[in-house]
Image (tube, rainbow, N blue to C red; front, top):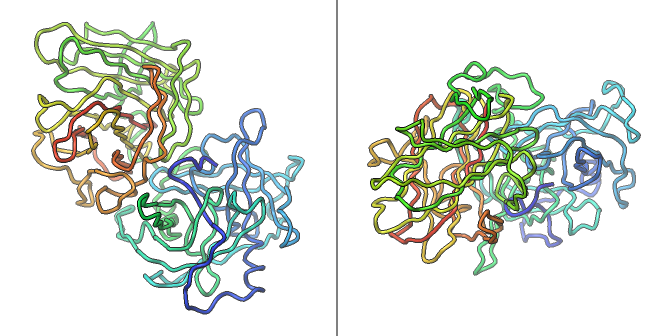
Length: 501
């Protein structure tokens, strides 16, 4: 499903040279029947993407990736009948839960191929057992799924765990990412990785490629991390969860075109120069209907707002999100100021109906210049309603050489690098490089932005992205310093992927 750029997943037809006992053909066939092909349907019922999933109980509960289900209204479930034939459409499924803090989602089979209701208790489907022992570096693994390279057939490959990366989830320190030398390719997102005992250990999720050497490592979401976010009560959409704050708590309130917005968020651009023109574009995801206001931070009377903009030609293809295109409910404003001094400008965004949801805020006209000192401070006032959403993702796409984008989250003094509640520094130089980025990083080499200026911009391995889970944060200003590595300078586009709940 949304397997553009970052989430290029699983299984090219080569095998690694791992010298370890393999699963027997009988075991491979047995496990294969627990892996399904997932078809994503839009609101009109048309198939627009596909991925993989794994049945984890006899009642038809399916584990997959979040980006496999993003943007879909319904799901087709294809199951193997003959192991050497393509899978057959047998069921439809409904989204149970999706998670923003890790790339994980849960589906439930609830209808047959003709969309007639079925009782899950009568299904008695083959399912995979979950591993109880932790995974270690060097351990052989086996991967199953439906890559596009497989021409519709299930594909099996093998490799080793090359890296185990720990992180914090719900106050626990545990593995949050595995890397493997098993080959991945598009279409296998959400598939299955098992250990030598044929037990479920992880979900194939991403691939990191080094362009010069063509070296690549596949990324797996550990099953233990997926279970940890579920046990911690995280999740969104159809799941009933305990939110860290009361719904709407701390949301920004403002008036626009006769509507009172109460669930708003604020992004503040500090010290912008006079006579420069900037453009903000807000695109709602799913049913979010955005309203945007721009005003001088210290002069709220100097403001303008927009609900629905027309004839927009803006679209983005970003890590985590896939393809997002502006529509009739999107909002866009140009803004500047005429003061002689540097001025702070606030961008306020909310839903016209005060509904929860998620959205993108794209800022054009920004540049790292010799006059900026350490960089451009973009301040997000993290509220309870944003913390409830569970995520905050910040992207910096360089559009002018020689800028090498660098994002640093800093304190309000802009002197010290900010640490998350687990004590980890929040920063990113080259997105997709775990050694130079905070948390669960994803490359921006396949990023495409069709901007408001009418130009198309593409990402590369120097662009930066900070992907954050917000559930453990307290309400506070988060200052993102948009800068250049080794003092490089040039123009850039900033994109915020945010939510309110």
